[in-house]
Length: 234
Length: 330
Image (cartoon, rainbow over all chains, first blue to last red; front, side, top):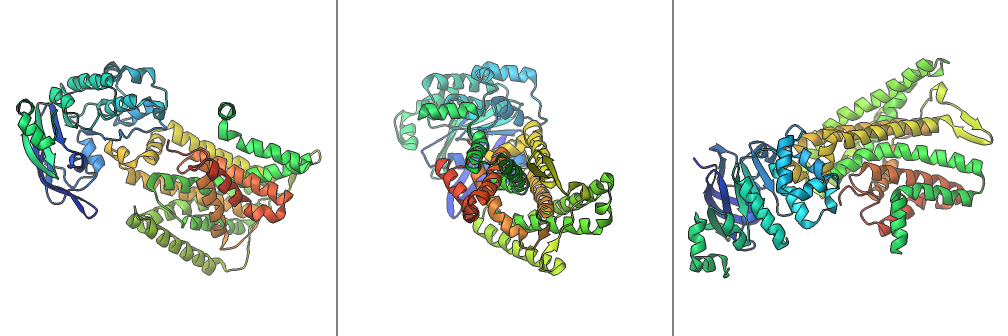
């Protein structure tokens, strides 16, 4: 049984149909990459999984349980974390407060915190700073750290490398590899060079439909398919 | 200019504004005794307006709800407290401070209880169906405000309603040639206690952390596993109860109230919420103190300007800081 499965998901935003027919399955463990051009429907797919936009018709199942109609908070409590494209950090709260907020009982496990600080050392240095004062890369680290401060089965991450310096992108990649040892990551990414090093399985969305699904190794080896589906040579 | 701005921020930033306003007024008024009386009156008024405005600011910030019906809680709080105080007039006239205080506690408790229950009803029945639709929010909450005003008119009549004060809050403290009305001092201290309570709730508790985060990004709080809609009912009830308490205290301050009290106060309350910065309790306090002080100083220095003073203050602050003095979101 797959960890997450989307079946014929169609999502409308106001009067616009954004997802027409999205179906794919995410197996447990590793990184699953969702690729596609700008405006193809990748972010809408993640938001639909989180219940921030309700799919109709279509269904989304997590560990076999239908989560289509559930409230976002109930979906999160099943063990799904979300790192949005805009990072969604709370600027007036401190780094530590941002992390505490992501825990179910308001207390951070010290071993876990140590691990998170190991992945993102800047967060330990600036733990009492208000989050708005962090740099773009540090904000992204905080956003990811918040998603992993407690064990989660599935982490949805939306374009985490956008606008970041190459050194931070590399550090982020290292962190994702380590996180994926114990959790499953569903990664939306436009930076194919970054995604190809991390992904095990992948799918491509175009115009609200899944147009290709398979392994990353196969897709990375097929330049013609990349050009056709992503519209550019990488 | 940048250096001046940095020094200003270092010294306390916008928190200095009430002190600067007070200092300017001290020079213009000239007479220290008049200045002290006006300052205490301004601080007391500011604290009562803060109580009325704090809930509205949180509701506005947390749920993006424009609640023009907020004034109904102020009006009902005032009339319910006045009725309880009227019913306990024997206790109020007594020389016993305990009986005086008991009457006051009963009146304020009745107002707060009403605010809690009415807040729950208002949120569940009137606000919930119009989330995310500002036009409908304005229409339906203004409609509710009119219904509330007419209900007060039906129950208490249109003539000014007299509000008895407890014996121990009558009169003034005389210090040298300075006279400070006891009720104003009491209103200031009670308002200050409410602010401290709210500050601790928002800054030292987990629910406060969630409310502050919800003001910034409601969707993200829900994505972390918390039901903001359920939290909102609690915030709405708290805000309504504070507004009712503010109304009850204002009734004792004015001693004669009419059903239009809430609607009249609403203009000031909205100005305070806007200049303070949406969703910010510290900003609301700052805005309320500035409005209270400005109103009293200008009422003394240029009475004809008093009515326009709050509008002038709002325009000046928004030109300087379009998001208010201490916006909750950065």
